[in-house]
Image (cartoon, rainbow, N blue to C red; front, top):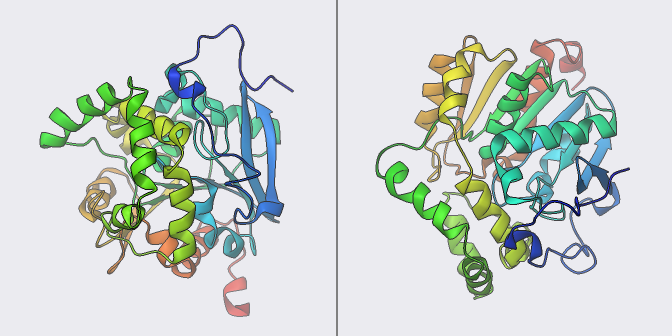
Length: 316
């Protein structure tokens, strides 16, 4: 077992901010009984595991945590062993040094966690930036899944004005200790988190909104999300997409206001054998809005690549 943090490594201010508390914010966390805390890669990770069968790794996006899979995970657990960690700095996983919040470092640290758990994922699903982490792990050779599912996947560089202004702004904000505290304070105002979710094009049930409120109301979680955005580089990853080995399924919400569904179509044109499924009327959190449909698409893909026997289709 390794220490949660390397005492010889200088820490950024983000690592010093208070993290969500498992006793308080996690008091009724979805599938709490499936949670464990594991030391790997110099971090103390929060991981949820459930089910039996081929291993499916679920990687949430920026600013989220394992609650993102609260409805999808148990559906997948009917056929798979589901492994869902909180990414570094997110949720209840410890915050690493700022230099470890890049996509490459996150992929390496997540690979260390999988080795510690003894898992070799046969299918990986990543939401938003989580899809980029999954693809990077495939290119690194740390995982060799038969299938990769991108849920409103952030696999293409942000272009236009967003690239010129938003990314430099995120990098500037990532150096401020005040910004995460202000965001966390505003998130506690009535209706603020509801508006943030509506801006993604999605509509969630009250419990789902409350889980996001707990996270966005925590300055340590917010600081990690900002640092992750500021450290992101997708140009190199996008250039490698034609070499992606796993069967790629892209599931996109037609009403996604964060990553347009046309980005999935662009990726499909780059990756041989890729398929796109557009879910009408859903936003960036489509897998939380219609988890049964997403589970069905993932199970179907698992049968196509031989992870599950096709005969199960008749039994269901």
